[in-house]
Length: 371
Image (cartoon, rainbow, N blue to C red; front, top):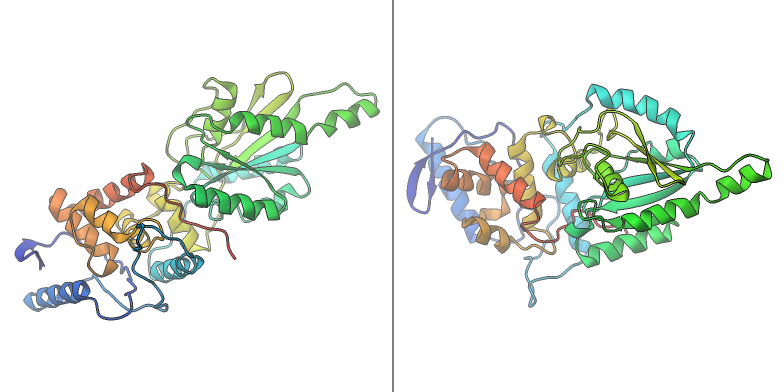
């Protein structure tokens, strides 16, 4: 089987057995027509049917992501992208990751939460909704909570303002932080102490001596919990690395004389029912790599970026020097593999994911507050 690229015939690389369903923009698309023609010609040369499948979608309101200034944002765009993502994930292998240490941690953490004066929940600022545990509200009950949106350096000012307003309306205390550089950590420490100040007032009224405020830091894997603690302490007390699953046990550390912090491993639900959220976790490296197919996830990322309100598809084409025919991510991954990696789809897919995680496409959030 062969694929025709720019008038040349090249061997076709190994293609995933999954189907990435790509929604088409309304109206005829000459680039998409050429892609279909090339694939039809390919199919006639051998009996197997190509596994790249381009089909229509449910929504047809996508605009070309260009404007006079090269940027625009519209709530309709975000709503449509969410709808598209749910459509693209149908038929893919479910993304699930629940290693043994998480089950043990969840049980221990529930017991430790009873001792907390305040709970600090850390989320990924790029996907705040996808990085909250569905049982978190039930576990915390009426305990005071501080929400930390980490990696604020990876989202735009508009994204930050939108989320700040959203959580403010809900009455939730929010701190934006950058755990790598320490931005927001001192504000977090002061806020934790102020929220729990009433603890020692009650103790004195009972004739008890004051004690340190106890704050637990919880959240999904690889959202930056340990990095925040290390920045608060100004020394490396907790192991931290840019991959999920590094912290594997609960650990208490002291911050000054009046604050104790509990570092905990990332916790995930035993089964992730929202596969659109699971794909976002994979894209942002907030779930173990063994849980997903790298090629599928990278293809969906390409499709999201091609229709993203702040990225525009030309940014992808200019970076990788290939045409994004029909906005189908699988085709771009195939072309990139042929161009740079001798047909290795896994390397091409990993390059795209790595570029996104390193911010090569700019400040890009994958979620906005629901309307």
